[in-house]
Length: 426
Ligand SMILES: Cc1ncc(COP(=O)(O)O)c(C=O)c1O
Image (cartoon, rainbow, N blue to C red):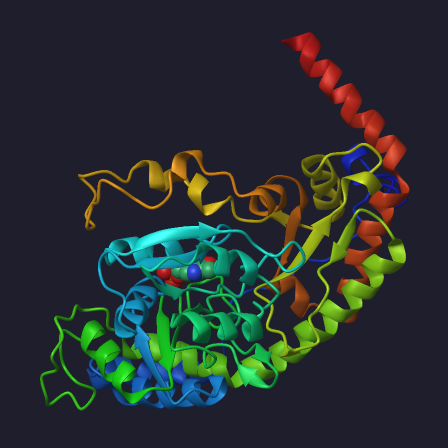
């Protein structure tokens, strides 16, 4: 059988530009297997075993924070971090309109009121001016989410927090290892939350960490996650705590991951740079978000991309993405605006969280302009495992982008025919 032609669009039966599989994720090795066997045989599976203690030290040092603790996931970490810095029921917490629902849920679940604000059009991270405009006498904290492949403007946010006496709780679920002016994300505010869920750049399937620099915040956070015990595990603290503990098995996987993350960060940064240059050279509808020079190391949960409809030859974002995916370049849209998440429709008095009749915003009817534009038209991401590919793989991803851009009239015709076929059928 004749091999199909790579110059022909894959969507029309040609050979895809990318001829190899995407790099696998997660990555593990023999060290974790050996450690895991030791843990299984030891019978010490929880309550600050040797791996958990070692991980907390290693992770704190990796981030450049004074303290780190392991928790069950990256949602309870936000609850604990917010409570540990003093957020109480009825306080307002400012959260970006574009993030995973957990950022908002965590604040709601501890009885805080969430005020959603707009994002920066370049980085898709929280817009400091929008934060400042949303401050009321009830505002207690702001949650900067370092989203996908860009960091929040921590200079502006720190300045606002100081002037208005607000706490900063960073959500670092996407940015293990990013640095702002040489300082680690997760060590820049009053406390921070990390997720180690399966898709993250440091993972143990499910898990999370709280990091902070303040001893009192650390002790309170520890009590909150460890049923009221202090970090020495001998003394009762003064807080009503829950069981949000992690396990030795999680710590083993995370310690293995920490041994690789430095090199993985380097490869991702290098490939992100190649892709940014490559997309620019192609001059098509996709470009990589500009990197803020104050970001001295960028960890990429995903590469943040902009889609420009004016350069897409009449294709919309979904059509353009479908053509790229057929060629082997799999881009995804961003999260939906957090206030559109269907989960929030289920929030009523039967919900297992402190319910309140009045909230500061009418979430169902909220419209936050940049958040909406990014989520619906402009935002795209390339997940981090693709950034671990070898040079030849990265070049093929760019070849896929170039091929689609070079065939726009053909694609426009294809989608027009498809649409008229659907119309006739209906
Ligand atoms: C920005 C953000 N915050 C919080 C979380 C919650 O983390 P977890 O899934 O570990 O609870 C996620 C998870 O995807 C996330 O992307």
